[in-house]
Amino acid sequence: MTSEFKFKRWVALTCFALLSLNVLVSFFLIRNPQLAKSNGIMHRYKLYMLPGPFFKEENIRSVSIFQVQFRDADKGWGNWIFPDKISFHEYQHNYGRYDKLKQSDFERHLARALAVRVVKDSVINYQNFEEFKEVNHYLRDQYAPANTDSVHLLFTVKWVKLAGKQTHIDTLFNISYKQD
Image (cartoon, helix red, strand yellow):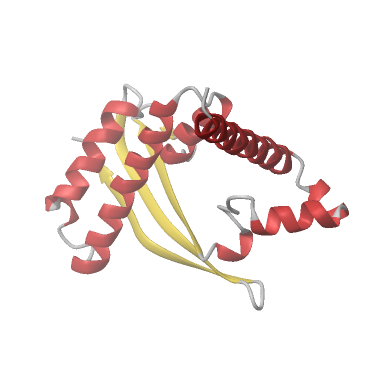
């Protein structure tokens, strides 16, 4: 073995060891964030080396809430359901179910697309919107009970102002219609 090969091998192994140590310490700090508060070295490590934070409360500006209610012909209106949250909670309980995360994203996309269209063109003639037809078709196939005769859709946005810790809720659409 030449000295150049030994040096390259030493550099590669050192880089691999440092990268592994970084991943290990990062995982440890993510799982135990209180450790960074009590230890000055770990605090600086978290501040400069740890990836993220990905979700900090002060970065949240708004929360979209899509709710659906189905009316059974015999029993009346059922409870409100939150389609995107149902799928997301299923994903949180089993991280192997990546399809549930994608389903939650898709359901959120459908609701937001309809909200954008309603805000842009008003709620008049909403049943002619392609976005509405897509939402209606999806909800009928995925969530509607067998005897559903009516549907109620509600999409709100909760705006958060952190300076005064105030919230403001906007209703972007509130639609009830007979199921076809």
